[in-house]
Image 1: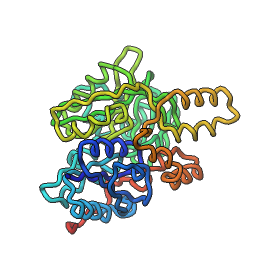
Image 2 (image 1 turned 90 degrees about the horizontal axis):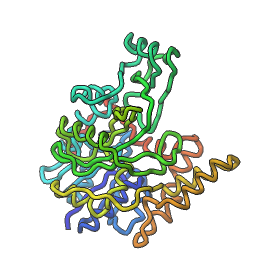
Image 3 (image 1 turned 90 degrees about the vertical axis):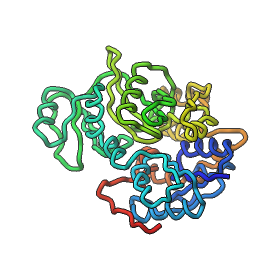
Length: 380
């Protein structure tokens, strides 16, 4: 029985991957800094191994992953979320027989950098907003002429996002940031699996319930122009693996790419679970959609419901969402991940409550990436 090593277990995306590979006859092992986590409660996971948090010691984290992969004889290493920015440096520590589903780290870093993403998309002839580095004369001129968004070049989950009306002063330069033309329109996101520049499946979706800047309820939609944009970017980069984008579609129907996540996002939940592993293992296989067009993260919505106390219109809206929308993790034949989540996710939940920050942002703090992080040694 071959083994797949997942490099995160705390997010629902990991649970979909674990269930899919288990159904395909694979043994599932998870490497996680947290000793307890959502996917660890699943009957589909054979083992969890604790590893060093990469935000504390990137080299130690990579060496831990290489050691676990060797000990478990992993045939495939599968990044789950933002840790891919670290994990993409792992091939130098792995034997040739172990496959890592990730593009080269240099390309992943480039598209994760919001300025690098704009450059690649523009070179491919795709519509992206005018963008300039904060602190440059071009950025100042753009902010004087148009409403803009200021965003951290390496930020995630809305961290550091600032919206400014035309003519408002820009913040002082600090952490590298981008000043970008504000596009008015409807927001959409995508999640795709590709192989060698060819799309196997793209889920386009939008948030139906938002916590902070993170969607905790989602609705899948069809949007041909967005799907064409994604296919052209994937072909231009020769992408293999998962990739995701955020878009704003203007009143004329043009999709403007505003951000790239070179990894999985919650759009994964819209694919048939059984198809995910099969499509990863056989690039000729397409990904089908699961029948439910709307999904939610139950416990996050429960938290939003408690926060809406005293605001009756919002409370009623959140409650209606809660009772009418399927949860992304619930399965009758594997119930423990949902039922035990308040316990498995308590360290994240309590930290989010103390800091008054969204769960999704707090969940990835120990995976914060710096391009200047320490290089790994060659010892596994």
